[in-house]
Image (cartoon, rainbow, N blue to C red):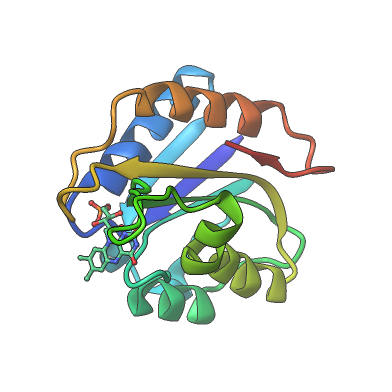
Length: 169
Ligand SMILES: Cc1cc2nc3c(=O)[nH]c(=O)nc-3n(C[C@H](O)[C@H](O)[C@H](O)COP(=O)(O)O)c2cc1C
C-alpha cells in the first residue's frame, strides 16, 4: 500500500507520532511518506491507498491551518483515511477535584470529529482513529509514556482494516 501521512504539529509531538507510524508502516512493507501540511499545497496531494491526518488540539478544536488544508485538499472520493489527534492529558477540575467523564471530555475535544466532518464530506472512508496525550502541565509536551504502544496498535489497526468498520485507539 502507498500510505501518505500529513500532520499539523506545532511543537513536534504529532510529528514524532507521524514519524513513528511511518516507520512502522514502512517496516510492514508499505511505501510511506510523512509531511507537515506546510510542506505542500493541498491541491497537490498525490494519490495514495490510505491517507493519515494528524492534528493538535487548540482551544478544544482542530486548528484553522489543518481545517483550511483539508477543505482545499484534492482527495479522491471513496479513498480510505485514518486520523489522530494530540491533546493535553485530562486533569481533575480545579474547583471540585473531580475527574471529568469521557463524555464531558468529548464535548471539549472536538478535533477528531472536526477532521472527520471535512473528510467525510469529500466522500472518504474512515478506517481508524487515535487520540494521544501530552503532559498536562505544559502545552508543549512531551508525549505521555506509552505513546509508542498506542501508535503500534494504531499501525496494526490500519494494516488489518478492510475499510468496513472504524477502529479506535
Ligand atoms: C494555543 C493552544 C491551545 C491549546 N488548547 C488545548 C485544548 O483546548 N485542549 C487540549 O487538550 N490541549 C490543548 N493544547 C495543547 C495541545 O493539544 C498540544 O500542544 C499539542 O497536542 C501538542 O502537539 P504538537 O506538538 O504536535 O503541536 C493547546 C495548545 C496551544 C498551543
